[in-house]
Image (cartoon, rainbow, N blue to C red; front, side, top):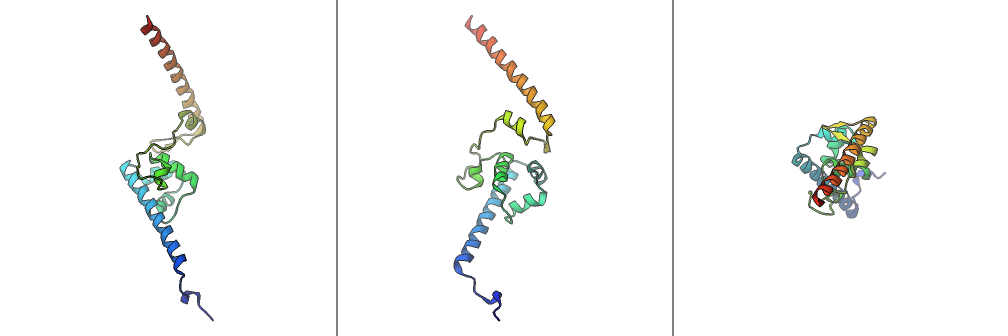
Length: 149
């Protein structure tokens, strides 16, 4: 009877495992670097992502990779681009996907000081922002009228 533990590991499979682990390690290093640079706590990041602290920690330690939707959320929370997190560029301050405040207020998630803002509160904030934007438009019209006289 042959014991599988005694069989040699094929070089290619072993290299693929090492390459994947290197990717996980580098991904984790980028997360840790950004977290420290942005002065964020693991607990606050995990809470804003809606995941357990240990799950986020496993990303930083290179044990796990997040699912694609979480990568986009991570980029938002860590104020970077998904390109940086996915090694498409090395500039962590590169602009990420633009965030439309109206979309964030309507669809969430919205986090303030590490606390997730509930949907009803996001709706209330959206109405306040709409009112402010409307007043800014009115103010622009008044300023233009005054300057044209």
